[in-house]
Structures are given as C-alpha cells and as structure tokens.
Length: 67
Image (cartoon, rainbow, N blue to C red; front, side, top):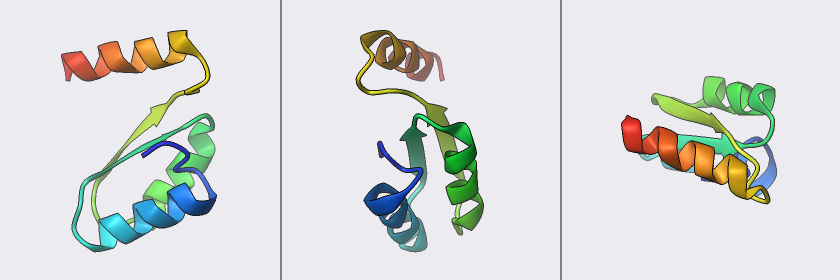
C-alpha cells in the first residue's frame, strides 16, 4: 500500500492489519512508515519508495523479486 506513512494510506493499513492481513507499507519517509508499523497488530514490511521516481520503483521491484 503506497502512501502508508500518513492519512488514508495509514488508516487503510491499520484497518487491513486489524482484519488479519499482512501489510506492506510503502512510502517516502521511513520514520513515518516505522511509526505506522508499530501501531499494527500484525507483522508488516516497510519499503521506502518514491512512486514518482522510476529508479525508486525499479529498485523496489527488483528487491521484491529476490525475496
């Protein structure tokens, strides 16, 4: 879920986590993502990414392919 560090993205992450989903938090600011992650009831993954940058998205896509 992109934009998970605040606002609607963070609210949706909390809601899905409360429903038992494993949530992947994506956003530009790691500290914000970590704060949201600490509020979740389930495990989550954090990926620092700027979706307006092709290089940033490519880096995360390649990382996912290796996990």
